[in-house]
Figure (tube, rainbow, N blue to C red):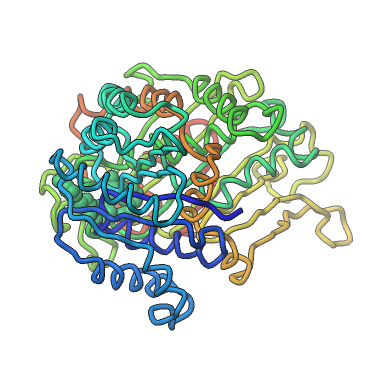
Length: 496
Ligand code: NAD
């Protein structure tokens, strides 16, 4: 259904707005979801004119486009004409008055019914002041809806996240707040629930009787690139584990929602996170491994400490792996191994669900060392590949009864992938619809910090021996040892 809304984008000249927000809004426009009754105010400090802003928006659309003629297309031009630029310093109250006047004018011009979406595409330390000013300067309308979309990082720990949440909550209620975790906008992540609850063979096996362990890998092949400034304050634990990985865990371990609605899903996910064991400091040190990349084997790539903008003595981790456990009754005792890092052998996000061995092997094993058959593994490829794989044991085709492993594979084609809406497009669409299913609730964020804070504190109390892994590897040896100690291995190994 076509929507009526005013977007106010704080940080309108920034990278996120250019690469994600403008192209996503354009795709919603192309599809007719946004039509005549929408307008966008971009704000930032730079003194841009509306004309210049239109150029920027059209360039953003063209840079994203599969069609090279997007810049000059009539549609892109028409789309860009809905954009207005307001130079604005978020700390200056006067500017909110100007912003309100423009917002009210556009509301009338485009018949927007008082519906407003405030998108904070800025550093989080500005969120509190923006939210307070939106309220005090009466940008928040009393007719229509008012929704606040905010980006990660949501705090640096539970304490700062709480402060941030208190600041925002003074102006917006929880049901008006849309906390983006763009992983939740990814098709393959949204498919987890379909796989688990739409298939009897999967749902009946999804328990501690049948699952041996779950492995989640978010591997990047790139280094820190131009994000060193941010990364030096964050590190992989805060950047990836607190949000994306714990969100994935909640989807993998939650109990079955009675219906696929935002509130049901939210409750099950909150419960799932509350069931993840919060470690003591000692347990955190035993169960979590950190790493920082060194040079590659050929010495052609720099180590992290010699990247532009990093500290030569940096203690920031570019790699984390660890073992978590849920205390929920269905999966209690099933280890959940997680891993993320930069400069690993290959970019891949995947989930491997490893099933237990059959209790008795009635066949002659081809493996002289053991009489065990290979474990069945269900793999969910999240990105860049999207698909599924199931490893099975079958007869090997010989005269005698030998067993061999095979795998059933399904991979989306490039054409299929191209049709899937990009994560930001989906999430903005959901925000317009008032659908909070794929946004993080405060209780989820808070619980995730509780889990992560202990690990951070444990690490901060000891000096790390960095660098400790070679660029292009799968991380430090200690990450392999973490599983070896449990007589297991990482399923995904891109170095083989
Ligand atoms: P950026 O530095 O490119 O843009 C920041 C924007 O804020 C600019 O438009 C700048 O003009 C504006 N700004 C800064 N100080 C201001 C002030 N005092 N008054 C008014 N405007 C001011 O940052 P970005 O990469 O676009 O990221 C924005 C937010 O999104 C951050 O919180 C970041 O962590 C988050 N985020 C970004 C990405 C991404 O891909 N870029 C991904 C995930 C999350």
